[in-house]
Length: 317
Image (cartoon, rainbow, N blue to C red):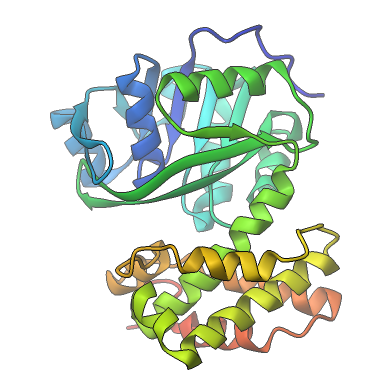
């Protein structure tokens, strides 16, 4: 049964599970707006936030610092009204278990991760009635412990997984609006997640595989063609999975690529070039497995997946 929500949600106790680029950026904007925000982080990043606050260096919003509580124990902040779930996809199950003490009967968990199967994993651990889907349209990374570099974007599209317009969704909308976050509540969030997936799986795969930014990839006919082939394979997977996308979605995604800054890359590229674990399984890996399940050929996606597989868990020994 879905939590009932609490009227207009004029004030919220917000837990940010995963205070990297996405969680750190949006959590800081909420904190700056006066919401009761607690950041969940670890290691040097956690210590820096505790000591100096969380610093945002934004190309769009300038530089600012917020001082909010930070912890490595999600349960220590009590029951949350709203949890922004922003961990890397490979940490989904462990992080979902960790937030369980912070999930009360009316807690909403807004998933802002890459991929299209995280909501299902979350629902299985914390309960399906708590989960809302969200697409974070932003590029931000941890520049240094306690410092988030925001390059561009900053919009959130979210909604109930069943498309309903609920009091809690309206409350989340108002809270994000008060924080100055461009936000849209959508009745078709599953389609929105897939529309983002078509872009992010292609963008991440191509920038990581070529080690080149968007401007280079789209200017070379062969790499641009490969990019489009990935988007076409993903659109075919969506259809096979019963997700209805707009008829011109492939052309629309490619037109969007042409609007990106030439220097734009992806978080997968960033993690690869910094020797970190990759969200390979949630992006290309999931697509390849879905293709096998539905009998949809994915030769280009498989090539990207296979080529990056040695780096999935960090730089190969």
